[in-house]
Picture 1: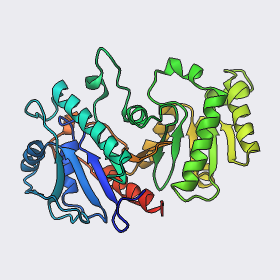
Picture 2: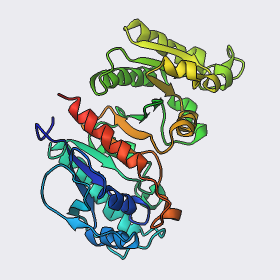
Picture 3: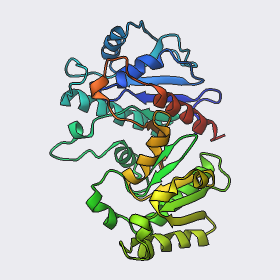
Length: 329
């Protein structure tokens, strides 16, 4: 539920401090938005990055529409060590993970209307006790929604959801089941309808194998799993089509007739998505009790602190979060 009847109240995690997240926070300070925005991050690190960009920041505690005049509202997060652009520091990264955990709890408590995440580094956050596979899975687990989450990449040109997310290619076939596909298609339908205000979402499902298996010549997952799942959901009144061979799915004609594609694995869907929309795409996690959007790129360790950083995806993530909050009413 919206925490303020007039103004969406957003929280942004600043991402791994060694990457471009801090640069994006600085750029955000000079972009106006019709929402209150709070950043969870380290004040000193953000000030230091602003100095690199020769920008002056003003910190505020006011809850008001984000003015774009260099003002930022920061919820301070301690870092263990000094931040160096491009140099990962496990202790600092783990502190940022604590900030993510805090932001999720605040959204669940209705203190914020939506969460926007800036990129963190998966490998540095993996410990002996647990493997960190990504924001999507971590947030779902923290929301007690593990197994319900659906990763969607959204843009004005193309929307692509994934049947599987951050797993090795060799593990994908056994992760795709009729039950899991039916759940994903149902979640997509409901969330596109309820959050994106699409009255009758049209979903196109890709095949797993080349040429969608070509009648079982190159694999039979389409025959055994994907088509039966599509037919079952179609029988429940959902407008879903497929499986369509992935090499011909993302054509202008089919894109114009589809509200969202469901790809079987990460690179199958996101290669097409990023080729068409990079910098304008937004990562959205569906199936959660909170609204979560994110940029469509990584930490950018090699360009942190430089003038090569494009904030477009962050700005699109904020715009979409605002729309999703407003769509709730």
